[in-house]
Image (cartoon, rainbow, N blue to C red; front, top):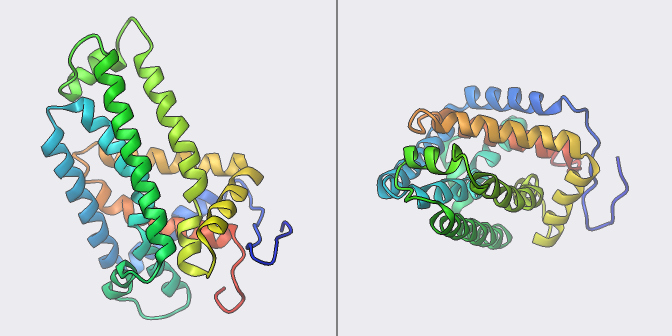
Length: 256
């Protein structure tokens, strides 16, 4: 364990294969208490379908809206972090366990949510501007995006789009990978939570890159069949993210 300041939780060094264990623990929590996860997953799916309905013929905007939506997804899973915490402590869990986290009792979480929303909005606007200004033809459907942007023989629009997305997603991931469950679980400031999250990533970048790849890969797979996969995948990833936090960050002995 690395040294820590009195106001900053310690960070644990972990084995590179731990992300697979977090996924297994996430599936176990989902099986033990499926209803809160299904509610959260259904709401995320419904929101995704709403985006698809509103912007399905304006894919230049939909591409950014969906990826921006995923930037704030860790915050939307706050209630499921609480479910995993209660399961770990051996306490009874009901839907209200998750819903209670949406009351305005966590101002730091609310501030972080605003920051994530601003980051997501910034990416939506950037993505839309990039595609509309640089695409050689209108992009109004997924087929247009595939033909005009992804498979274009000339230009580097798709590569530039991916690069800009990665430049935004990487710091958002580093800032949020453990900060949201940390804010839920311990009395720390928003700055402390974000800096702790960055320490986790900087001290073991390989392992956290594996975790980021698993999160992104499973989320992309969940989006493919009309986003129905979000209903089971989202809660599993949320529960797994709680176990990632408990593995990576030192908790008070009373809470461990």
